[in-house]
Figure (cartoon, one colour):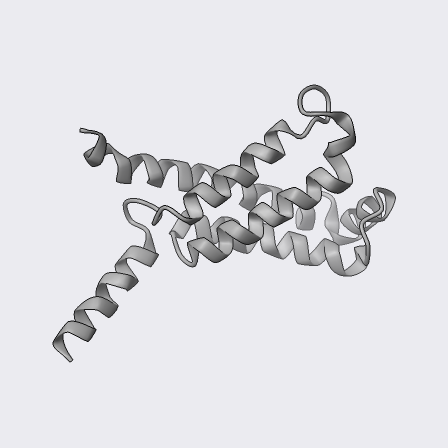
Amino acid sequence: MVDQARPVVLLLARVAIGVIFLVHGYQKFATMGIAGTTKFFESVGIPLAGLAAPAVAVLEVAGGLALILGVALPIAGTLLALDMLGAIAFVHGANGLAGDGGYEFVLALAAASLAVGFTGGGALALDRVLTRRRSAATATA
C-alpha cells in the first residue's frame, strides 16, 4: 500500500510546496513590487539588493511552477532550498527557530524543496514523463 500511495503523496507535496513558492514570488512582483522588495532586501542587508530582489522573485515564481509541473526538480529544489537558506541568514535567523519571525517555516520549505527535488516528484511529474520518453527513444534507436 505504501508503494502505491508514494507517487500521489509526492504529487500532493510537490504541488503544495510549489504553490507556496509561486505565491511568495508573485507577491514580490504584485503586492510589494520589485521596488518594495528591493527596499526590504536593502533594509536587511542583502548584498546587491537591486539584483537580488528580481532574481529571488523570478526564482520563486519559476521554481514554484517547476515544482507544480514536476520539471527540472533537482535544479528547482536545490535553488529554492538555497533561497530559503538566504532567508534564514538575512531575515529569520536572528529570531530563533520558533516564534514570531522564526525560521521554522523557512527551514521546512528548504528541506521540503530538497526532498521533492530528489525523489522523482511522484505522479504526473514531467521529469518522469520526459525520462520515460528518452528511455523509449534510446531503446528503439
